[in-house]
Image (cartoon, rainbow, N blue to C red; front, side):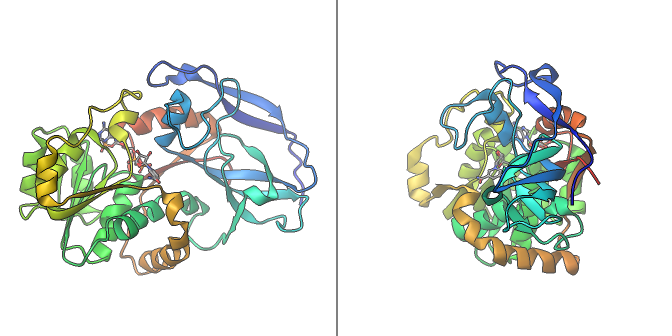
Length: 339
Ligand SMILES: NC(=O)c1ccc[n+]([C@@H]2O[C@H](COP(=O)([O-])OP(=O)(O)OC[C@H]3O[C@@H](n4cnc5c(N)ncnc54)[C@H](OP(=O)(O)O)[C@@H]3O)[C@@H](O)[C@H]2O)c1
């Protein structure tokens, strides 16, 4: 297989913003499709992921788990594509691969940096970019969810939250409660994604809203947000409650200003023997085969809704990232780069 195209396009970081980026923080550049050296593969990207963690790499927040984006260089992020040229025997041309070189139409990768996936595993190759494993690991390995327990999920209409709420129900939670940022999203949680109750996180006081939604208290909180929602959840947690600390959307959407800290009076947490446990999905990649099998079965029998927003064309990626953090979409946000 070869490519007749000689032109590639990529999105670069034009300037590091002070706070949240704007459209002028990005630059669309045209380059040549790179030459492929020994041990390398050329990938035509089909879909790339857009996720809030990218804001931290743009802002170069302190303590990042991965390199910040460099001004003048292309951004990177998860993508799935088709190998159009391979100079390594371990990757065949035509293979579908997941890798970290999104934000460009063609990616040149070392063969060892790509993961070959089954192109027919899911209805769309974009599903390989989903955050279901994050949700599954957080609920099982991190929070130790038990049958009958009440689970609260924040940013529940988002990529991770939508999966977390549905997976909690499928794993036997007794009650699943979610928060989201608009009446339409709240209605979607109970109407489409099967949550038992939901509320709008703009509706203060949050602890009261959560108590109304979870009158028996919360046993497991899947936290995508931090800040006020974490404080409210801790107030409403039951004895031996567990919090899976997954994300920090309240900080990410505020352009990185540090949060005041979630805990409040530690005596209340001691009294309730609360566990707060941060995690990264990369600690739990061993669960991927088990989760993949379960997800395929849930999709096949219709017991899970895969919520995804697909935007078209590399040019749409910067606006997609800005829209994502404003709450413009539901589910996993991906940009389709080719068909
Ligand atoms: N630990 C890990 O390994 C891991 C892996 C993947 C992702 N993450 C993190 O997990 C979090 C969720 O990721 P995701 O990709 O699933 O994102 P997401 O929930 O799809 O993020 C987009 C949503 O964030 C919500 N949001 C924005 N600002 C908010 C605020 N101040 N308060 C509450 N909600 C706000 C908006 O929803 P509303 O309209 O409902 O407000 C928006 O639609 C992120 O912090 C991400 O970095 C962690």
